[in-house]
Length: 188
Image 1 (cartoon, rainbow, N blue to C red):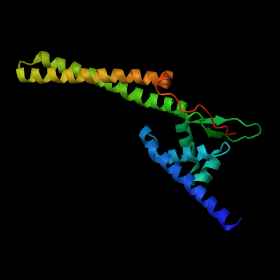
Image 2 (cartoon, rainbow, N blue to C red; image 1 turned 180 degrees about the horizontal axis):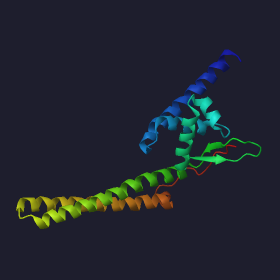
Image 3 (cartoon, rainbow, N blue to C red; image 1 turned 60 degrees about the horizontal axis):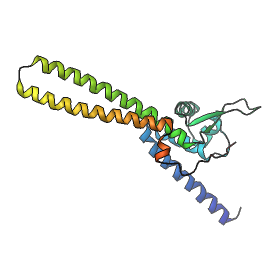
Image 4 (cartoon, rainbow, N blue to C red; image 1 turned 45 degrees about the vertical axis):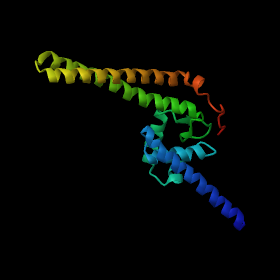
Protein backbone atom coordinates (compact mmCIF):
# COMPACT_ATOMS: atom_id res chain seq x y z
CA UNK A 1 0.00 0.00 0.00
CA UNK A 2 1.46 3.37 -0.94
CA UNK A 3 1.89 6.21 1.56
CA UNK A 4 -1.15 8.17 0.31
CA UNK A 5 -3.48 5.18 0.54
CA UNK A 6 -2.12 4.32 3.97
CA UNK A 7 -2.73 7.90 5.14
CA UNK A 8 -6.28 7.81 3.77
CA UNK A 9 -6.99 4.56 5.63
CA UNK A 10 -5.65 6.04 8.87
CA UNK A 11 -7.76 9.19 8.40
CA UNK A 12 -10.79 7.02 7.62
CA UNK A 13 -10.35 4.98 10.83
CA UNK A 14 -9.77 8.13 12.91
CA UNK A 15 -12.91 9.78 11.50
CA UNK A 16 -15.00 6.69 12.19
CA UNK A 17 -13.55 6.35 15.72
CA UNK A 18 -14.28 10.01 16.42
CA UNK A 19 -17.93 9.52 15.47
CA UNK A 20 -18.14 6.35 17.59
CA UNK A 21 -16.78 8.34 20.56
CA UNK A 22 -19.42 10.98 19.94
CA UNK A 23 -22.16 8.34 19.87
CA UNK A 24 -20.79 6.81 23.08
CA UNK A 25 -20.66 10.16 24.86
CA UNK A 26 -24.16 11.19 23.83
CA UNK A 27 -25.76 7.86 24.66
CA UNK A 28 -25.37 8.76 28.32
CA UNK A 29 -28.49 10.87 27.73
CA UNK A 30 -30.36 7.58 27.48
CA UNK A 31 -28.69 5.96 30.47
CA UNK A 32 -26.19 4.02 28.37
CA UNK A 33 -22.59 3.86 29.56
CA UNK A 34 -19.84 5.08 27.21
CA UNK A 35 -18.38 1.56 26.90
CA UNK A 36 -21.74 0.19 25.74
CA UNK A 37 -22.02 3.20 23.43
CA UNK A 38 -18.64 2.31 21.89
CA UNK A 39 -19.85 -1.27 21.48
CA UNK A 40 -22.93 0.03 19.68
CA UNK A 41 -20.74 2.21 17.44
CA UNK A 42 -18.47 -0.70 16.56
CA UNK A 43 -21.49 -2.85 15.66
CA UNK A 44 -23.03 0.00 13.69
CA UNK A 45 -19.96 0.44 11.51
CA UNK A 46 -19.36 -3.27 11.05
CA UNK A 47 -20.15 -4.44 7.52
CA UNK A 48 -21.17 -7.85 8.84
CA UNK A 49 -22.77 -9.13 12.05
CA UNK A 50 -20.26 -9.70 14.85
CA UNK A 51 -19.73 -12.38 17.48
CA UNK A 52 -18.78 -11.56 21.07
CA UNK A 53 -15.22 -12.57 20.19
CA UNK A 54 -15.21 -10.14 17.25
CA UNK A 55 -16.44 -7.36 19.53
CA UNK A 56 -13.85 -8.21 22.19
CA UNK A 57 -11.07 -8.05 19.62
CA UNK A 58 -12.39 -4.79 18.14
CA UNK A 59 -12.77 -3.00 21.48
CA UNK A 60 -10.19 -4.75 23.67
CA UNK A 61 -12.80 -5.42 26.34
CA UNK A 62 -13.62 -8.64 28.16
CA UNK A 63 -16.06 -11.12 26.68
CA UNK A 64 -18.18 -10.72 29.83
CA UNK A 65 -18.38 -6.95 29.24
CA UNK A 66 -19.32 -7.57 25.62
CA UNK A 67 -22.04 -10.03 26.65
CA UNK A 68 -23.46 -7.62 29.23
CA UNK A 69 -23.34 -4.75 26.74
CA UNK A 70 -25.03 -6.74 23.99
CA UNK A 71 -27.75 -7.86 26.41
CA UNK A 72 -28.35 -4.23 27.46
CA UNK A 73 -28.47 -3.04 23.86
CA UNK A 74 -30.75 -5.93 22.93
CA UNK A 75 -33.12 -5.08 25.81
CA UNK A 76 -33.26 -1.54 24.45
CA UNK A 77 -34.04 -2.84 20.95
CA UNK A 78 -30.81 -1.33 19.61
CA UNK A 79 -29.10 -4.63 18.75
CA UNK A 80 -30.61 -7.76 17.33
CA UNK A 81 -29.38 -11.33 16.97
CA UNK A 82 -28.75 -12.61 13.47
CA UNK A 83 -28.97 -16.22 12.38
CA UNK A 84 -26.50 -17.51 9.85
CA UNK A 85 -26.57 -21.15 8.80
CA UNK A 86 -23.43 -23.02 9.79
CA UNK A 87 -22.28 -20.41 12.36
CA UNK A 88 -22.44 -21.76 15.89
CA UNK A 89 -21.60 -18.57 17.75
CA UNK A 90 -24.23 -15.90 18.30
CA UNK A 91 -24.06 -13.05 15.80
CA UNK A 92 -25.34 -9.53 16.43
CA UNK A 93 -25.95 -6.38 14.45
CA UNK A 94 -27.44 -3.01 15.25
CA UNK A 95 -31.13 -2.44 14.70
CA UNK A 96 -31.07 -0.84 11.30
CA UNK A 97 -34.02 1.47 11.92
CA UNK A 98 -32.76 4.20 14.27
CA UNK A 99 -36.26 5.67 14.50
CA UNK A 100 -37.50 2.36 15.87
CA UNK A 101 -34.56 2.15 18.32
CA UNK A 102 -35.15 5.70 19.52
CA UNK A 103 -38.86 5.07 19.92
CA UNK A 104 -38.30 1.97 22.04
CA UNK A 105 -35.56 3.55 24.15
CA UNK A 106 -37.19 6.95 24.58
CA UNK A 107 -40.58 5.50 25.38
CA UNK A 108 -39.29 3.08 27.98
CA UNK A 109 -37.09 5.63 29.75
CA UNK A 110 -39.55 8.52 29.74
CA UNK A 111 -42.65 6.48 30.47
CA UNK A 112 -41.07 4.89 33.52
CA UNK A 113 -39.77 8.22 34.88
CA UNK A 114 -43.04 10.03 34.16
CA UNK A 115 -45.22 7.38 35.77
CA UNK A 116 -42.95 7.47 38.84
CA UNK A 117 -43.27 11.27 39.02
CA UNK A 118 -47.07 11.07 38.80
CA UNK A 119 -47.13 8.53 41.64
CA UNK A 120 -44.83 10.72 43.74
CA UNK A 121 -47.00 13.80 43.09
CA UNK A 122 -50.12 11.86 44.12
CA UNK A 123 -48.43 10.67 47.31
CA UNK A 124 -47.23 14.17 48.14
CA UNK A 125 -50.71 15.61 47.55
CA UNK A 126 -52.20 12.93 49.80
CA UNK A 127 -49.72 13.65 52.59
CA UNK A 128 -50.21 17.40 52.31
CA UNK A 129 -54.00 16.98 52.44
CA UNK A 130 -53.64 14.96 55.67
CA UNK A 131 -51.50 17.68 57.24
CA UNK A 132 -53.94 20.33 56.00
CA UNK A 133 -56.85 18.54 57.68
CA UNK A 134 -54.94 18.12 60.97
CA UNK A 135 -53.49 21.61 61.37
CA UNK A 136 -55.04 24.78 62.75
CA UNK A 137 -52.08 26.88 61.55
CA UNK A 138 -53.42 29.21 58.82
CA UNK A 139 -49.97 30.03 57.47
CA UNK A 140 -49.20 26.31 57.06
CA UNK A 141 -52.61 25.76 55.42
CA UNK A 142 -51.84 28.55 52.96
CA UNK A 143 -48.44 27.02 52.09
CA UNK A 144 -50.03 23.59 51.67
CA UNK A 145 -52.70 25.02 49.32
CA UNK A 146 -49.96 26.63 47.20
CA UNK A 147 -47.92 23.44 47.14
CA UNK A 148 -50.91 21.30 46.19
CA UNK A 149 -51.53 23.71 43.32
CA UNK A 150 -47.90 23.35 42.21
CA UNK A 151 -48.12 19.57 42.44
CA UNK A 152 -51.37 19.55 40.46
CA UNK A 153 -49.64 21.59 37.75
CA UNK A 154 -46.69 19.18 37.77
CA UNK A 155 -49.11 16.27 37.44
CA UNK A 156 -50.82 17.94 34.46
CA UNK A 157 -47.41 18.30 32.83
CA UNK A 158 -46.50 14.65 33.47
CA UNK A 159 -49.85 13.51 32.07
CA UNK A 160 -49.13 15.60 28.96
CA UNK A 161 -45.70 14.00 28.79
CA UNK A 162 -47.31 10.54 28.88
CA UNK A 163 -49.47 11.57 25.92
CA UNK A 164 -46.31 12.73 24.14
CA UNK A 165 -44.66 9.37 24.85
CA UNK A 166 -47.77 7.67 23.46
CA UNK A 167 -47.44 9.78 20.29
CA UNK A 168 -43.84 8.60 19.97
CA UNK A 169 -44.75 4.95 20.67
CA UNK A 170 -47.65 4.93 18.22
CA UNK A 171 -45.68 6.68 15.47
CA UNK A 172 -48.04 9.68 15.40
CA UNK A 173 -45.03 11.89 16.13
CA UNK A 174 -43.88 11.27 12.56
CA UNK A 175 -47.01 12.99 11.28
CA UNK A 176 -45.87 16.16 13.05
CA UNK A 177 -42.14 15.66 12.58
CA UNK A 178 -41.69 13.47 9.50
CA UNK A 179 -38.67 11.25 9.07
CA UNK A 180 -36.16 12.71 6.66
CA UNK A 181 -35.60 9.42 4.89
CA UNK A 182 -36.98 6.01 5.57
CA UNK A 183 -34.19 3.68 4.55
CA UNK A 184 -32.37 0.88 6.23
CA UNK A 185 -28.79 -0.14 5.86
CA UNK A 186 -28.51 -3.60 4.40
CA UNK A 187 -25.84 -5.21 6.55
CA UNK A 188 -25.57 -8.95 6.20
